[in-house]
Length: 281
Image 1 (cartoon, helix red, strand yellow):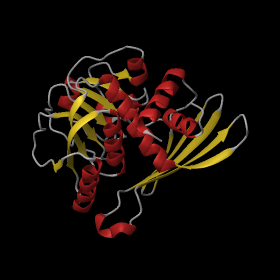
Image 2: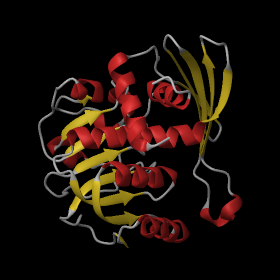
Image 3: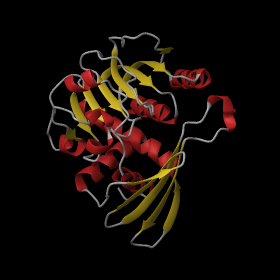
Image 4: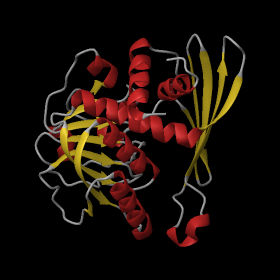
């Protein structure tokens, strides 16, 4: 799935719609179990996700990932049933959605990318932004030295200069920022360069905030769907209106600087990705 093509598939589903109730969340002894159904006139699906405590670095390469998912999907016209890799679909549709938002809303369409969290989502966002935006350089921050080094090698293979972000101030050349961490506390400073676009995609519960409150209050704030207003910690008690991505596609704009796009995920995006995989765009 190319990220640009997938972003357009997401755009179509956002504008056309489908049936997708809020995900159900069950508490597990060490995490959560998520059930995410969606359907339209041609496809019905359900994604099942387990979110467990983050794996320990000392467990080595055999450690189990903290998020595991699978997608059951059915073509309603033929009756064909598919079992699809949920993690791959999730990371690709999430990055493609951020790309769609960046191409639509970012004040600056060229510049450096700052990525906090060089995991699977971070790598997907790197590839998506490299495909659909004019990147000049990459800055990255991560806790694991091995993962950070591996990520930086991938950036160089794609063809961009890369360096670790060690300071507290975001470099002025940064036009795009991605936070892809399940952090309960902010991973960015309160100030970022003027005209920056931030895609905050890691935190997904009301008690989690990747972006500091002072920055959110200044920003033009967008979210993936209205469910984010309930689920995203950054949007709780916010004193300004939040524009959904669908509303933005229809021409509505938020006021402020920088631009913040908060994404917590939704089954409609899985529907768009599955439709794209099945050639039903």
